[in-house]
Image (cartoon, rainbow, N blue to C red):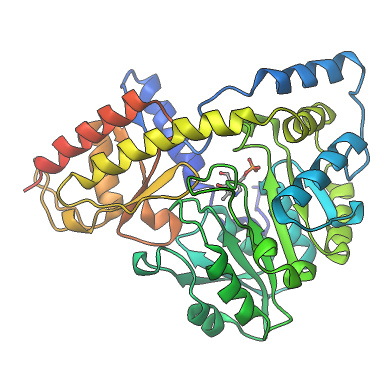
Length: 400
Ligand code: PLP
């Protein structure tokens, strides 16, 4: 009998991947499901990006590349970083991988020894704790409630840091809440970090182009350039350019960390797909109008979802400033009874009830480390959002 390594039994499969699989199953059984679980843009990859990939194939760019990517991709990443952070990065300060997800995993593999601690503000992207566990680290979860906008406060950070802290993870805009750290909030966290030079920061800015505030989003190293030598900026093309299936992400950080990550990458996959690299280079260096047009669509969906959900008695949600998720407080329906007589005890019960009675699929807040909430994704049509909100309203009204 096969016995998996202990690192496998330490972790669980991604709940969002599991939720998506459940929706597919129900659809295959013929049920029509209003799916609000989706963690990817519903748009097609822009044509000029696809064309660049086809061109790369035709030109025979179908071989291994250097571990750190083709010259065209490296150039595009360095220029993008300069534009987004206002800082200069060199080629030995960047790494690429099969999605931001793989970059984060490799960062932990390159840096964590047994028992090293990683501070993870909750609610968090589901993969962080498991990635830490898989690499022998200890996830240190810090609850960040709605009263602080689901964001880590300087005091909570100071309290969480120990001698064993290796990393702090920040994710702005956040999956699952859509919360965005302001420049002042990032500065305040940086001021705490100044007193703890052994702590590195992984800032996951994969949603930075999906931002509803004025101007562009401020990232951590832009707000605190003095931290550049201990920050790993993680980004990629998945969300901004509707390229989740191409699997291309990147990281930028101090040369020592990046060198260790690239050494591992050379033994893991050698390099991400050469065709995806060509597509990503075109995405980062080509026409950026897709960001604006898709952003306007996301904004109108956000407005519809937030207004609709807040009009339902027992539910409330604050307005997300970025990404394409809303984190809905369902504390007001706990303790109520469903038409078939069962009591809604927690967000998981409520999400199951919504799937059963309203055919609406969402993900319970317990998956993200903070209840009683559920996450909806509005990376779906306005029609589905409106139908889902109406169905949720009806289901809530059926509770007694
Ligand atoms: N980081 C966050 C916060 C995400 O939500 C996701 C995808 O859901 C990723 C990283 C992974 O992105 P990629 O497709 O680049 O691996």
